[in-house]
Amino acid sequence: MQVVADIAAVRRAREVDLSATWGLVPTMGFLHEGHLNLVRQARRDNSRVGVSIFVNPAQFHNPDDLATYPRDPERDLALLKQEGVDLVWTPLPDQVYPAGYQTYIHVEEASRPLEGAARPGHFRGVATVVAKLMNVFQPQRVYFGQKDAQQVAVVKRMVEDLNFPLAVVSCPTVREADGLAMSSRNVLLSPQARPHAACLFRALQAGSDAFAQGEHQAKSLRDAMRTVIDATPMARIDYVSVAHPETLAELDVVAVAALLSLAVFVDEVRLIDNIIVGETACAETG
Ligand code: PAF
Image (tube, rainbow, N blue to C red; front, top):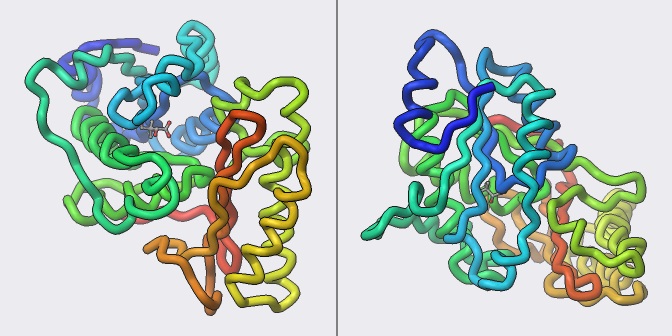
């Protein structure tokens, strides 16, 4: 496994075998099973696998959030080596955003609601860094977890709009035994708060069960999810949404499919999760 920091070194490693197909897994490190699941899918689909580890300052609008973002580069590299990854890019911030940097990508509609409304500028930072990663690695496929459903929607829109010649692969959310979606942020939960964090998945299940029983009014599905969170100690709703899976526009009635999603503070840790009702979750486009 080659570990490099310079853009030129990534390009050289990438060009050694031009007949290879590359899968890229962009990460911010502090890897968990969710990331490793993406790496394994990339391994199955491609002859070479690249991973980036970069805590992207441009997607944090809160400096404390950036400062406290968990990091463990040595453990990350050991895990990636075990998975047979070929190339890891670990740039420093000024290699990605050198002095004088001033080019950003703004995906308009898909970035606006939900996480975009709660975290101004977040998707501008995500779209920009993902475009740069794809430009440097030039992969045939790029992999994301469905847990960040809006991120997937934003990246798919950007890839289509800017004609990147690659496929965006989104893979199902990997969960703990109690349903909590795996996330690097879970480590920030106190032992007292951790058991309550499963309320996000329970709320999504309540929405999904209501849909399966024939409830297609979006308001009723939102209410079913809210009821679960409101009954959970230490949990406070940021938003609860029933939206179109691609445009992310809020729905009145679910005709075909919907993205049920929510953001909840458990103690002081903000967690997100989602599921799609009415269609399957793992998809490749491009
Ligand atoms: O999902 C993440 O970890 C980040 O948003 C990503 C895609 C690596 C971009 O920094």
